[in-house]
Image (cartoon, rainbow, N blue to C red; front, side, top):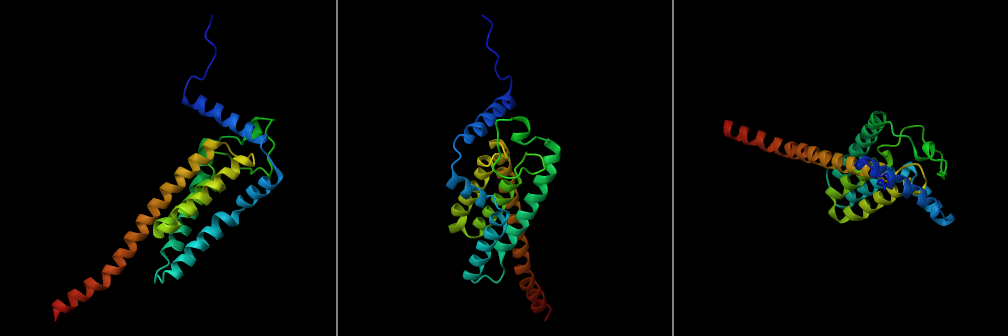
Length: 202
């Protein structure tokens, strides 16, 4: 007996699981759940809500510098821009473009699928706020995860698309946090150094 055909590499395994999960989700669609995921997928949730939470936390914490809101905004914009650039590199079609069994619940974007810009931008903004305000970290990362899952539920992304987007968003948030923290630390040390030099000059 000849061996049954099977996947030859990791990419084939991932592709099979991607297709199986997206097709399986089609059978789980349910009115109230569909509505909830459509709302989570709205642009305002991954931007205005998360960044707004960061700004409120900054104000309640009486911070002179709105570090969370600024870092989240920078992370969001960077993640959105970079994910759109990477889509043109990978050129992965949307699930419904290659599988007639997939019936998206929302309008399918004209861009490619990999990585998910929703996942990238929501994880970037959510983690950025969470790094400044640790108590908000897991709630906002949880919200970002729901936003990412919504894209699979709605039939416009594969699971690996949102996983790649989440990883990209987290990396950008960490980099932005490092840069903003380093910049504010330098700004805080600047006047002190100047004062010290002036005192020594006298």
